[in-house]
Image (cartoon, rainbow, N blue to C red; front, side, top):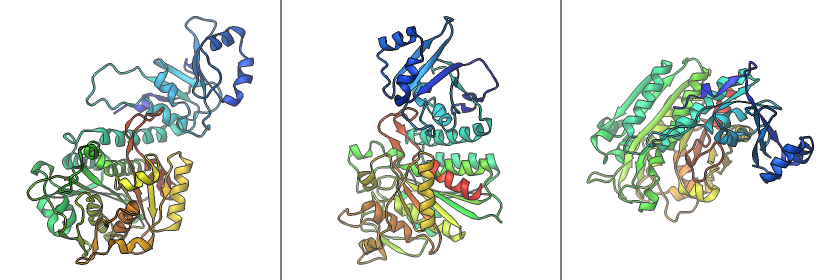
Length: 460
């Protein structure tokens, strides 16, 4: 894990090179205030004041220089100076004008690398000095949590199965004095039959399990965080094509978000009784794999006609949500890389967000906008509930036709949430297909910081 604490330091007057951040609209005035040699140098480098222009500016002494970034991002954006952290040489820097603010997060994350499988010399550290020491700890915690999601999602399924997710939860519980409970393998058959059905075809070493962590004062409001932990999704007997299977190591992205969010809650000491639940499985193919047409029992007592073994995430979440509801929480949040339909509707950057409580939806979306971690609400449209009807069971897991796929998946989950319990479901992609400053291609935390801001504002 990247040592973020070494990269963001309180400004105590240490030697540092300046970074000038200039808005395109202010570039002409800024340029007019520079000496002729600087203007000539920038002209030679074709720095015209377009957003994204960068340059190194010499000073009087040969060893002294500063950095210029032309940037049109708001001062509240965490990604404002991320490109500088990626491109500047090793050293210590400070912004010439203005506070670091939220940009400290982008500075840190721009220097995070997932190097588990890659050799090569790492770049030297670029340290940023800030005049807001009170923000340093929170910024580092957010960077650590985001990096945790990225690293878990990027890890190949051969190295990250249900047992490894359990180990991550165990490490978290140990660090914060929480209680870990794990129900594995055949022990799931009676209490969590859908989790067992989905994961039963995997090898013994990758047996399915429900991982639970409980932390905090029992007298505080109870909050449940649930994360889909499908460590690899072949599609089951409704097997995916190879192109669809290529990125299915990331199908545990919901679990990665849940683990990271739980870590933020515990590190900050929020006044909650936290219940983290991760149903962890591999959706494998073998002679004992669950089949299309099977009728599945559930912890809630409902029966489900399995119409598609590739709609397995909602099955394991159903049992986990039922268990979460038994503790009578005041709030349930779940994260899942659940549907391709959400990506078709909203693309990769916007997690589809569903909530059964208007105040919760408003607060969650506002938090995402505030912290540059946007969410987009889709409706729990009651009219589509009839699409879940089965001729022979209480409901199907995947309606025929494919209409409103993200909505019907959320409606399926709603069947397992206690009536009256505020609940939000975040259907996240957990992946970035195209790199941006501070946000490399690969695993990504999408919705994590929004959920954290919501919880921190309510229980901090």
